[in-house]
Length: 345
Image 1: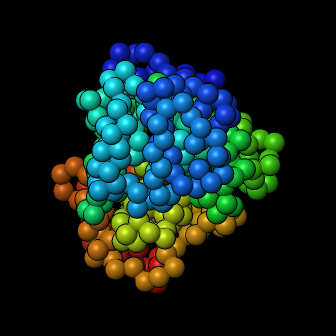
Image 2: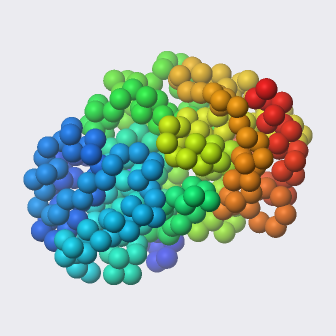
């Protein structure tokens, strides 16, 4: 069990390794369970929960304002009261959307995260960030909403298609580059799979790293929490260019981390070779460059709308040396465009 402090009152919530049936047994009459159609197919027990069930379509496109509005309508139709709870059972999309719903209905109701994907377990379920995407960019509408608890349904990983497990590995690898190089050493020693003995230990280490970063800067006031966004400035822009359709989040940030390592080196902020970053992602079968030609003007336009930006230019979290990352401000967009054009051509 891992305890995470909240910033508002120094209370704590628990992150606990359990299984999906244990988490579903926590649901009581008057609660709402939000999940996606993939989970319902794999776990018919979801349709037998004590509370009301809301099923969304799987995929990033469900994190839209229109879908948020539709889910809120269903929540009120189900009769959720102020003392009711919302359970987000699924991957990062379900967790982000259901958490945002929980933060806004009745001006906030209690929320339980039940992550079922690797990416959600190691990243999006911990830290209190919830939100939805807008046409202008990813996660631009959101809130800070801590859960009552996080129930890591590790047994659900066996239902994931291999590409979605690999997708989550991008966030796992990120923690090694920004914080803990011993994690990189472990991941290099043998490809981590759903059957690997160290899997639960690796997930726990990633959660611990995110806890430590979040507790140091819950509301992103001092730049510490922004290091979790390594690869995300470019990656989120690529997802927006894709229209949140085909490019998975982990794939986008894998490309983004390689790209941002090239930017750091091109700006003289790091001696780290982009090829050494790319090598790890290729080892796990993740992409390291866009498969199609990128409209650089549109890409940089999305990057200029990133939430981290302050003042002139771009703000990006860049790795200086393995295990250390820093938020840099005032980066020239024209220089970034040139570096990426050279990298991808």
